[in-house]
Length: 614
Image 1: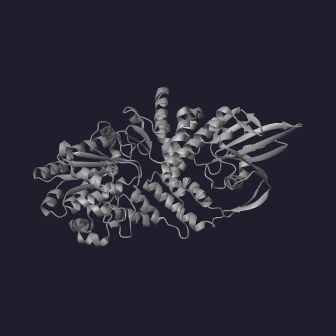
Image 2: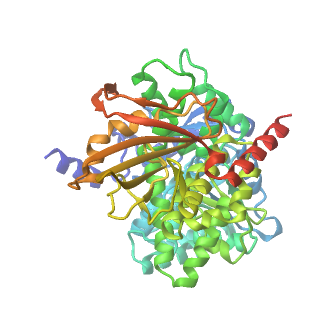
Image 3: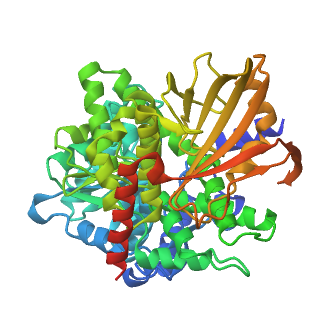
């Protein structure tokens, strides 16, 4: 009953307003909001200062407030933190009309803060007296274009009773088009802001049919003809892509937070009695690309983990575990899934040549190689971009996700080409990126050349990827590599069956590659899941003996905190879970012993990194 009453109330008061606002009337309500915006919006310098934060009136009175893209306070204001890019984008907006430009496309990776920036730009322009039409969610233009746009215009002219009288007489979109033309003829230029504009793309998978989206787009073109149109959308916005290729008026928001903004973020993420190490900061910034949405998700994990965690037993080990948990949080998993889906949809819709082209563009972004102008149409601009013609991953998450996709669909041989080896040498300045390239090249080297295990060079009869837990094959030896870039415990696992004195022995080798001396305890994580792992992996196959050898492949075994030893079976407790860890042998092997070539490149990377520091 309550739901029905709420629905009826929503239909009766489509603006979703409070009873007090109903009483004072629509015109007064819009006028009050406009006055608040003009009075309370700071100047451009403050809005560009990362050390300033504001709670601002949201410049929209319609019923379809975009609650999913903003953080709100209890009074319904949206929260904004100063961004240095504000003045740059504002400058582009203020220059509209020069050189014939009537339109501006604001593009950038998903989650970089475009919607917040648009909202603040609208407030500031209203503050300085510009006539601004703000449609915060173009998706609703597909369904109720007239009413939605009319509500936007009521705020635009809330302080001009004569124009409001004309606006109130408008009955349909044709009337609004005539209204816009008459406003222009009177000498008033409107700044029309359209967010989530990709909802109108003809290739969009929006709620409205393509024919409806086409009609709305045509109307908006006519409506804005004598005015300025500023459009923003996440990444894959067809009109912005075409504008980029044609070198038209585009404001790009790529690259995440600036140095100053990031410093402020770290200050806000302080934890009592804990100082974040430089390596932790470097790793998190590389993984997130300083993307505000990814950082927000990371901050939530940090807050929870600190409340739940036990005091550190090993310096830096908790930070390593924290990073691993951040990488597996729901928000990051969602990003990974979207990257996979875009890539898969693209290759599934084309032939073999198109598939090869997509793989090449993906690899170019990971290796920061040239991407031709024609091939930029392939890019998933939500998470990838180009800079000076070179492909870019907007975050370490995107780099790892697309690499996992390439390993699964293009094959592991891709990662043993000379250019992948060379990348190890070039990225020594960043331990997180260095570790990523070491892992990819080393896994593919093992896959291609085999690996010495117990003094015998094992050539793998089967190499495959697995989702969560691999199922052992009758072939032996077998190398399995996780499909997920953020597997919770290992980088690979080997199953090897041997016969000794007539006894059939299965040796399981979980493998962890690490260049971080304070790597999380992957052994604990792996063996906490051993019971269900063994049930699926080994199943009903009968072996006379099962041996477990946890293999660490590290930069320098002599300084690595984990030493080779036989670990007895024992009861363990972690994260509220008690389990019995089986007996196993720990082995520690150097990266150079697995691949001399990778070892040489790693040594050179360290020298290059030290040279940069000096």
